[in-house]
Image (cartoon, rainbow, N blue to C red; front, side, top):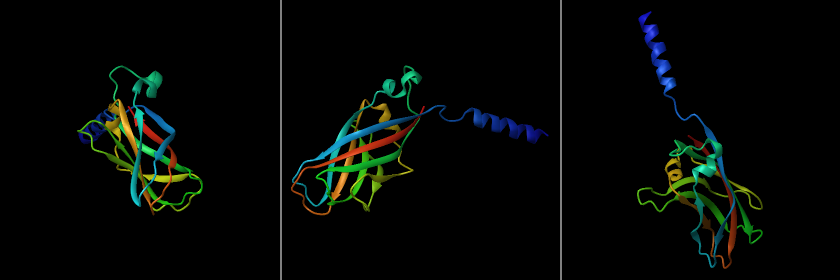
Length: 168
């Protein structure tokens, strides 16, 4: 009987000290990445500066001094907008970077190879990628790396939507 009571107490303590209580979805929608030509075969990167304001992101749940306990990219979709019909990109990789020298760039999702053009292209989020530390920054760089199949003498516009799950 003592063993049973011990197991019950241990399980109660384990679950009472559980992880984050709240979950929120944060979206960066229709952000633009401009690749200015001429572009060369291989990797070409474009970036977007995203402001991180937990008060705006969490709304009524926000309390002074709050921090995000876990952040993960759950969905990533891009679309080649210009030039129309562009099929010169073989893959995309989305990463987060920061001005904080202690925070290394983190690759979050990839599509390689691109199987279908002419619409939305879904990237596969990495289940092990952790974006948590970036939500402690005031701003982050969303970097979209495009791998071109050949040199392209044009500007290429790509729009992306990225959905994060935040636990706090």
